[in-house]
Image 1 (cartoon, protein in one colour):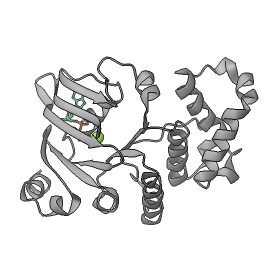
Image 2 (tube, rainbow, N blue to C red; image 1 turned 30 degrees about the vertical axis):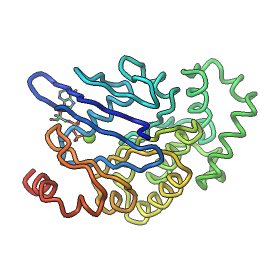
Image 3 (cartoon, helix red, strand yellow; image 1 turned 120 degrees about the vertical axis):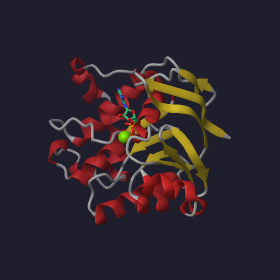
Image 4 (cartoon, rainbow, N blue to C red; image 1 turned 90 degrees about the vertical axis):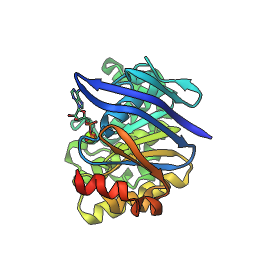
Length: 248
Ligand code: ADP
Ligand code: MG
């Protein structure tokens, strides 16, 4: 069953067709990678899944509900969590505070900083945050400031902030961008483990090693159009894909 269905989506910026008649189905429980050259429209497409952009025409349905016109927090509450290309964490706050804020955002649709006292009384949320940190091997740093973490650990914290929300669909925009090979491999193992729990994932990624290690299915976007959608081993040998990359 498709958890996300994109039908005939178009998005223009001025005279530029950033997305031209995009159709995409993401099956429940799968890791679906979206790849394509720079400027292909990957981020634009992802932004249509999280309420940052609305398509000009077409539809986006998630878990049986249309996402069109919903606000980002409403989409988050519907079950979509996102890891951004650049880590979006609160550097001055501790790891456990970051994860708690994310849990509150999902529960309440917003987080009010004047509710800090109430936050610390929320033992259930605190427990859940600690469990999630421990799950990602970060429990030992729970009281450190998030700003001090290495790039790879910031990524793991962001994943913790997503997982504490118990998403049905996890969106990852270049989850290994800027990482050294060892950190990349650690992230791949972690994401495989998360996929093993049955969480559906959409991964945008340039690094082909990451794509082919993780993806169950790959869609290739080029100049706003899906030019191929197939199993990873079939994508590798597809001449249109090679042309889009080498020619682009
Ligand atoms: P990708 O993420 O695949 O690199 P993008 O989705 O960021 O590609 O961009 C697709 C195209 O749309 C590019 O030509 C880009 O310059 C253009 N674009 C993206 N966002 C905007 C915007 N807000 N205003 C105008 N043009 C944009
Ligand atoms: Mg992009």
